[in-house]
Image (cartoon, rainbow, N blue to C red; front, side):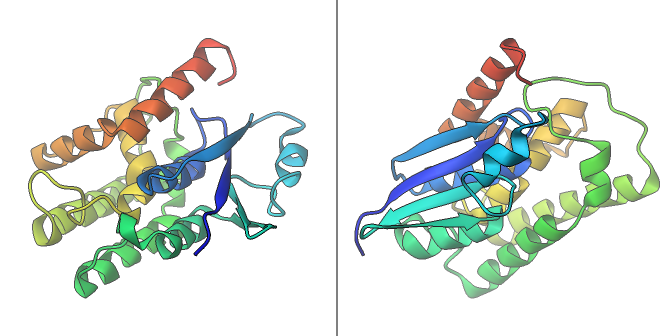
Length: 220
């Protein structure tokens, strides 16, 4: 395979959950890439994104390969593409049972939890009071916590990520960890330790620094 040049199009880092997922997966490959940041929640946002990706949404991944350029859009599609192109990164678990479970909970995150997304929007660097949570949101939080506890118990170690090595599943749930931190949702001790490991990742620290810079500049 030829060496590709990547450009990742992301939204405002303090807010863009889907961008964070693709960013973490790309960082996990160890590959250099360029980055284009589009500020969200502005009148010109959609038009600016459409200059780079036909979906009109972030993230998008431009791949320049053998003289041609194509764009992958949708965070899970980007993660899958990176897993194919960089098998050495082990973005999906090697064990078939672990891989099937990782794919299942990743797809569930991708397609669901709308009530949680609405009630607890990502605000990466701020600490905000927890709003009143209805039964649906509480149930979704419990469901996610259950997924994490099950994965760590069955497929990981106490000092590992959800399925041992860092994987797409960790990418998909990183914004949820951010939401839980922002709104002060407490986690059981093993999951609190997992959250700490995630926020200690160099990629997460870099994202946080950029999000803080946005907030300091009044961009988020």
